[in-house]
Image (cartoon, rainbow, N blue to C red; front, top):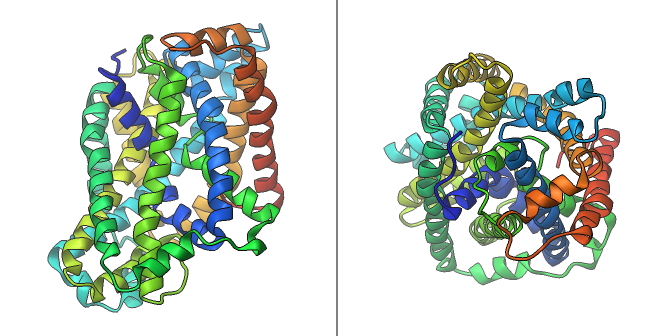
Length: 434
């Protein structure tokens, strides 16, 4: 199994896996609603999850030297538990990764279409609602873009850690640079300061459990601590790398990505007096309307959607890779390229038949409300309650500049894991998608 060639490559790949639509359209919307109360709660939770949750998945991946299925099997085997459970329980978070890839590829195909229309200039002369309806309400409306996105993702995964690392060394700096350019442009808009004031306002009405839960869910799933995806990133990690330090850096960069997106989205919405929006409405209706009225809007549209494409493909890479690695681990005779092609065909064949938002929207809700939270909970419980403590701590301390021991494990066992369970129960009982 090839490894990441550098700490930078590992961190950028981890950030690429984490940065996605949750940062671009989820975080700005929730920050716009909750203000400083949401932000402070989010920072607390992102600190906990980046300190315990993310390192545990990296460590398990490095210990198991494989993807999701093999990692759970080895974790259960350390306590001589019923290995039949360990052999099959990993399928739940793994199915979550594959399912989210199916819906996610449709979203990125939408973005690819909007990028193309930005390049041609047609985006700047349409009624945005009619424009969005023209492909989001029509079957097989973005087939070509869908195929392109999946093909690019497959090509970027062909060489495993090597090609994933190389592409993320381009895409992730590109994401940050392009969003920084946009943020600088937004600063020059008249009354942009009102947008920043609104972002960081203190609203005492937001001092409630709802805001705290939104912050907790956003932090948890923004880091992609889902009991599956980050395991394969850890599997490609060298023993000399400091897992906790790198995880904290990943959490900081993921938060920076979300803040950069917010510095673009929220002031623009306030300046142009647009309605608050999250999800597809923000990217495909609100922002195009703003870009149409902005000087050099075509250039900034190209910059925006290129940056979002980078974030989308880097996330898809992780989803494809973790499924491929697990298939190869279970079926030793299966070649890497064939495994990736099978995954690509499945993602395309199912996804192309749900290109209408009325189809992939509910599909994504089911995945995010049920499968992903359950998988995340299973992961947390397995790493801190099933996997032998000494093995996890030993793996965490490989390459570490400081020693992590009982206190670190207790935070994971008695703080991080209960939070994962709470999020799962809230999602299941109240049908809340974080």
